Image (tube, rainbow, N blue to C red; front, side, top):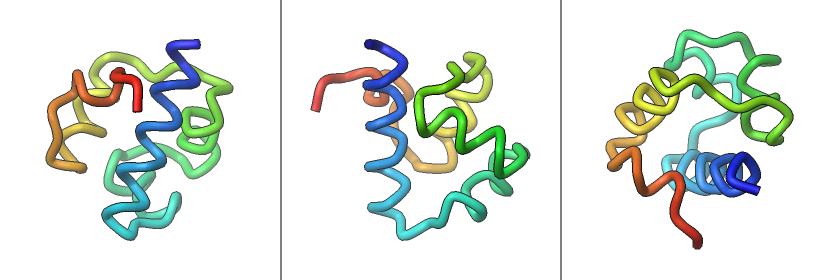
Length: 68
């Protein structure tokens, strides 16, 4: 459930920044396939990846775990 919430919030924030999955994966230093697994809640990201995601999106990392 937490993994799904995280994935949903990441996608929502990514779309607000008008970034494609490919662009976002490149900013994070991840493969496109690896990033897709995170956004589809097939894989949980490491904490350092959550920090990178928050930095790229310019948001507080905790906001990625909040209910929307």
